[in-house]
Image 1 (tube, helix red, strand yellow):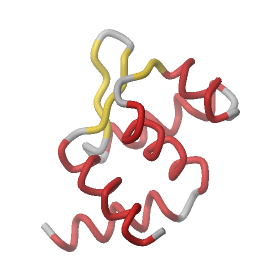
Image 2 (tube, rainbow, N blue to C red; image 1 turned 90 degrees about the horizontal axis):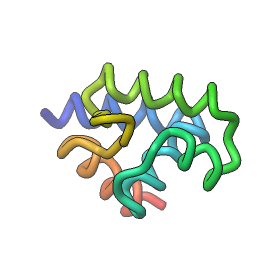
Image 3 (tube, rainbow, N blue to C red; image 1 turned 90 degrees about the vertical axis):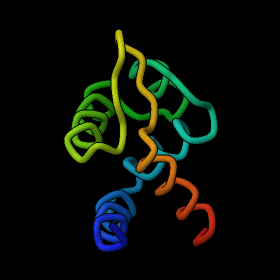
Image 4 (cartoon, rainbow, N blue to C red; image 1 turned 180 degrees about the vertical axis):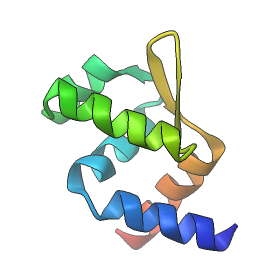
Amino acid sequence: MAEDLAGSMGFIMGNKQRERVVQILGSKGKMTAEKVAKVEHIPGPAVKKILAELAERSIAIENDGVWSLTDEGRDIEKEMKKRA
């Protein structure tokens, strides 16, 4: 589990936009991809790609067009706050 967390942390923290998407979902809760793009000033297609990558790694999940962090995603977001 710790290795998975470390690997996911590296994946997210290796890209500033990924980091911002995880942070906004962690702090604001559920959002649509469009809202994430608007709030974070990241192009919509980039946000959708990032969310798809996060979903592949079970960090974020989509339900009826609304995205949120999974339990693992929340753990990662908490760890990111500690390291900031």
